[in-house]
Length: 353
Ligand SMILES: Cc1cc2nc3c(=O)[nH]c(=O)nc-3n(C[C@H](O)[C@H](O)[C@H](O)COP(=O)(O)O)c2cc1C
Image (tube, rainbow, N blue to C red; front, side, top):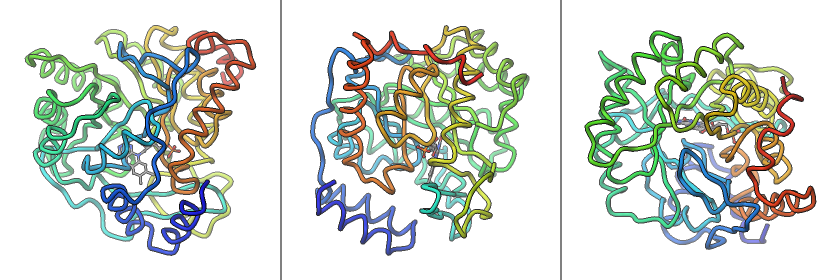
């Protein structure tokens, strides 16, 4: 990490966490944040998710750039792909503040934002005028007060479809009351059917991903896997934040909301391996949760992921983490004798079952 980045992070950590987030987005927009440039790539790092080729498997997870404000600088940070949002049909404020907590002793974060965003019309305008040289996806959400949440996802997809490479149905945020109920068998079948119908009407069909919670049991995972195969999902993202609070030491550990970062690593990796087993490797998986190093990314790949996303580690390690993770992952794959990333996918999934 450069001295400038170290000082920048120290400055941000002296601010209220939500303020620090806004300042970091501004810094990116103003060109003040040091950026790596083109994504690092190699034969070992290239991969594919739902038919989308990636130069490297390291992606930005949803929730950092909710309103697609910093797409262009973020596409020059070394990521192989980006996900913006969550976007809902209408703008919404989200939960009352404060609603974001740093847990530095645990390398973790708790948030209860509740889908605060400027709404899909404003977000689509930005997507429309920003080109990126790496694939970008949109995290689809539902308005809190919506009478028909299942239709919100189709509405957001339809509005932005011409400007995105994939869309993620997010039914796993713990911060919108009853949203996770949409993961249950009948509700999910109905929801994905509606999203697919909306997708069918588009000139350019969008690969649909599903993002799941780490707080599911094995039966629920198998149900989701069966539905995913049935409706032809392009990928599953494992996982969102958890409501678990095991083994934390930070003063903010009992704040309500979703926990992310290091303490989520094992739990989300187990869900990933279970999903790989439940789908019999027939759907591409993205591993998310607690990744902060090349070794972590490698572990997710060995557990079943064809690509990886991260967010919380950036709060502690800054954007220079991205080229470091990518470079370290390349070295590890070479050292372990893998000519291509996909040869390593799922090789130690058993260990997590
Ligand atoms: C502040 C914050 C906001 C988030 N917002 C979203 C969101 O809008 N949609 C979503 O699918 N996930 C959201 N997430 C979850 C992340 O995308 C990711 O799944 C989770 O944080 C685990 O990864 P990490 O440990 O690398 O942070 C959010 C996470 C954080 C920390």
